[in-house]
Length: 212
Image (cartoon, rainbow, N blue to C red):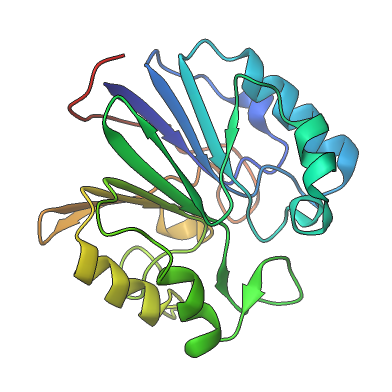
């Protein structure tokens, strides 16, 4: 299966040129301020993309998804789009889990305190996860800000080291876009924008065993 991964479009999705693939993944910050009109525009755009499977999570800018009821989300998200929030989906035997949670980062959405409060979310990640989608990065992996500081989550890193997914995909730290491989885990920071919120980075494409 050919997968295209993007993150941190911040309302700039119309400027993207997406390669062809079987699955499109977005790891959060679909909007600038998380207003209903912003997320509606994104979801409608996302649903129109020519992929068999379309999966996304929210990010720290996406306030609407933190505040919305289950009924609101059901009304918002089309049948051909999968939204994950501390939840998972299995497609052609590929187990995917997604969470928007990140350590406290300003006064944004889906913030949790480091330690026990955030680890409750990471302990929900199943041990058979093949592709892990989080908005924020694990500590020490493509998480360095321009300051420079490593701002990724230590507890997420520990959970990843325990379950060893094939792929860990995230965004959040725009300036840390890229890919690294460690312990047979492929880590991807798929942020498509830079610090100035300009679309400068290409979508990341990879293949994983599974039929379309």
